[in-house]
Length: 509
Image (tube, rainbow, N blue to C red; front, side, top):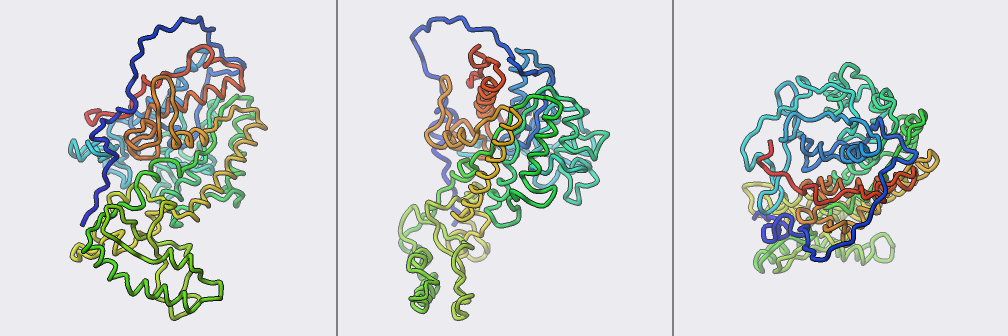
């Protein structure tokens, strides 16, 4: 029994119906706007630092069209209106996406996602196999680069020497995207490549990966949250402070953005906690299989009554029950549950499992895993039903709290550091929350955080669309106006979101 998640009725309403322009018959009175001015900012040499959100990552990959619509490239085009100079990016070799090493595709660095009619699908599922031509050993572009956004980079990576050295790749100490940028200085850090260019103005959107890796792995511990105050060279506060201090030391102006609530993005909000359809016969069979487990939970509750070690509330939450319904909750592992075997060896065999609730967040890739068979030869081994979903597929409330606490601490550091340095600050956290709570209207478009139909987030459920990056760019310009006295907004030079797409054709090469 394989359960396929139904993608949001996208095939019925069209890919961008919710972003269609409205028709207006009224004629607005023309108002003469002031000439665009930079205020006290100097945009002549703009350098952008950050991670995939700076690089232009979208639809699960880095490719030319996405890079051309990257946040800093969009900003650089507006900066040209007020004295901004050229802006160079380490462009990929094609619009397929993915990376290769000496002619061989790097595992995990695949071509982009596309819309397949009912949801996101790999590009190659529609057009067939492609040759990934962006090869980090054979054809890296020549710098220097104004866009130093490195997909996957955490705060401390911007300070790490050798992070772009091909020789460090197999050691896990180098980033293949940064290898493409270092050229003849493979051991230079991201920060060194930035300051070498003597930027007059910089942007920094950093820190998302310091929590996102933990979230994407379901909080299973394989990619921990960066410590707020950690050992030298690792702690977020030390790393972020060092980056800002170095960039600001030359007198450059800048704009920084804080960390959005990762739990508000569609990667964690799309797959429902209860996607399992069962008829009466199947539900009864599954319940019969869980009867010994349920009996063990009840026995543990009776044995531990009055001790305060195992409550009725927790016992009730751990009982497994399916019914004839199109919306049964999946069964999940939850490490935050009481280890009953540690209390009483008689209950050693009782796993820490329960059915999911609306408080749990199921990661997007689980949509293609729930309902598959753990054992192809055993039709009863259904993942998410008979076989609980492991930690990597779910963010339980305790893990969400860890992420939230870290973001609050990181954002406090970002705010205080930016204010102390006199930099413009963009509250992308508030922007993302608004996208997930009703959406944001700009001009003739309303963007939301809904996957596929919302217009703001790309098909990977993590990174913005080109239109989403344009929306964020407008907030960057507003923040720059407020801090440096420029007038992008007052002069009518904020972006028209309609000029930026929400998807790229599979035919784009």
